[in-house]
Image (cartoon, rainbow, N blue to C red; front, side, top):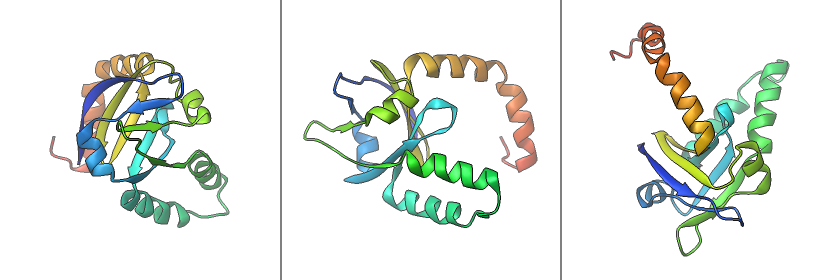
Length: 145
C-alpha cells in the first residue's frame, strides 16, 4: 500500500526522484498517466493491468466512457528508474500537471500521485475546509470512519 506525502523537485530535463519505499512497491517498470484534479497517477504494472481490464469493460457506446478511456490511455507511458532512482516524466504529462520545479508525491493506497506543489496546496486547502462534509457523504459507503 502506498501512503505518505513527500516533497521533491523535478529538474529541467523532467526527472524526479520518487521515494525509495514507493520505488520498491512500483517495481522496475510502472505506468504514469494523467490523473484527476490535474495530478499524475503512477501505477505498478499489476494494478495497471487490473485497471485496464475494468476500463475495457466500459460500454463503447457511451460517450463518457469513451472520453474517459481516451483521456486515461492516451496520456499513459511506461516508466523506468535511472541509476539515481529518478523517473523521466514526458513533456505532455508535465504540462498537464503543471510540474515545473517543486512537486509533492503522495501515496494513495494502490497508486502514487505526483502534484505540482502549488496545485496540491490549493487542492489540499479547499479539501481540508470540506473534509467533514466529504466524510459525512462517505458514510453511505459503509467505510466506518
